[in-house]
Amino acid sequence: MRILSGIQPSGRLHIGNYFGAMQPAIKLQDEGDAYYFIADYHSLTSVHDGKALRSYVRDVAIDFMACGLDPDKCVLFRQSDVPEHCELSWILSTVTPMGLLERCHSYKDKIANGISPSHGLFAYPVLMAADILMYDSDVVPVGRDQKQHVEVTRDIAIKMNETFGAGLLKLPNPRISETTAVVPGLDGRKMSKSYDNTIPLFEEPGPLKKKIMGIKTDSTPVEEPKAVEGSNILALYKLVASQADYDTMVADHLKGGVGYGDFKKRLLQAMTDYFAPFRARREEIVADKGYVEKVLAEGAEKARSVARKTMARVRDAVGLGA
Ligand code: ATP
Ligand code: MG
Image (tube, rainbow, N blue to C red):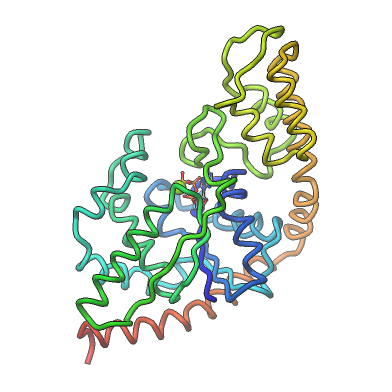
């Protein structure tokens, strides 16, 4: 089984990335042949500062490994180390119907949230299709926001196979963990690096406290029962607390007499405890000079050798080159 997943270096990784995509990907590294990449071409759609982008790339690699990604079990690479992704993307774009892209929610959501509507952002699903199809991927672990893009990838692969020959590209399947499909942000929207509503995975204690205490709540008085449905605090607490502690918080919501401030303090404690071991591992990785560069260089070589083979097949099928 070939597994593929990517994360954009468009900011600091957050707990939505962790529960939606990284944790499932880390589990899958023991179950198949996994390729995980840092999607720097993609993040050019939102980051236009070269120095910042390079530092985000490095941080994504460090954070992913701190959370349990093991470069001895999977291939970790930087997308731009494999420029074949862009070549395949162009070829795919020539068979991709405009209507397919016009229907994509992610583009519309980003525009609605103030990201400038560039052609790159619009064409993002085609590059993502190239990322996936390049590695003959079977399984793509993603959050729910990316489900439609994996479906678009399948549609593009079908179109390619109809046009240039059956079996040219393999059809992938999304793998979405239903319990963590959409992690809400501090403001209740999907937690997203580009929405400034995240809880970064490795946030410092001071800012973490400030963020959690600032989660939006309604104005129900302390003594009254509080809504369980739609509670951001509960949704986040469920991810990091034990079942028993979660049940207690639900009961406290229902019976009233406990304020939101109290719930937020419990959330802060559970969040801090949950990520403490990752924080320790992160420090070890950072202290190991040259380690990240070495991992990415090795990953690039392995990924590129697969990409070259796929491109030879595709170029031959479509008629490029001699
Ligand atoms: P950006 O705002 O730049 O798009 P992002 O925070 O949405 O960044 P991505 O790099 O686009 O992060 O997504 C990486 C992976 O994390 C994808 O599989 C995506 O589905 C998943 N993911 C992102 N946000 C969430 C979330 N809030 N809940 C669950 N999964 C998420
Ligand atoms: Mg995103």
